[in-house]
Image 1: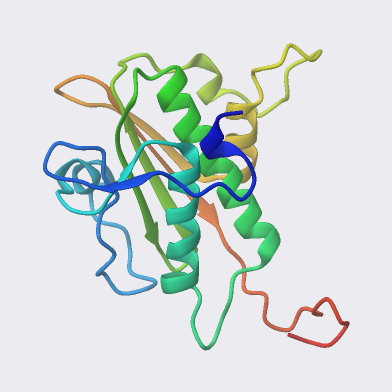
Image 2: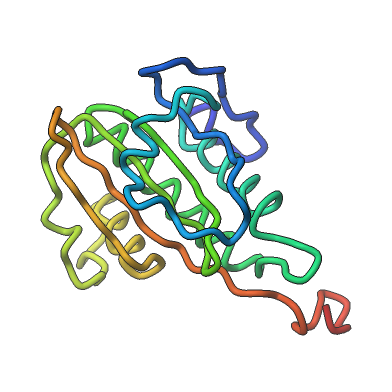
Length: 188
């Protein structure tokens, strides 16, 4: 576990410029459909927060939920936000460990949840990305990332980029917590 990944760690985030790993600014309306090409939106992002760790990506994704998906008429179920943060961690960690580094990151609010887009620098598409989501047999310390992504996300798209590398886009569904009992037992 790196210093940035320990519980309560402050994510590393820096202002970014053109060509840097970025999170796009979040000026679109909440619930808007994603851009026709999420990859091009992430690739073209010139301003935002530079992502250097899974912790920074998780913090940004949570802020998208709090500032854009949640509204006066709905709020995301906490267990769905936990699933979202797990998917963010797996996608960003895979880009760092197996994808020759992060080339871009984006989290966009949609009517159904949060669309995540991660760009990396490797052309290699992992075979398990097209798997069933079954967890590996035996505990070998790895191999759980893609099965978790497959189980928790929808609309998984992997595209090779013309200039090299790949773009992975997924939709993590969020449900409204309205009407569910709160921790004190009253309706929320």
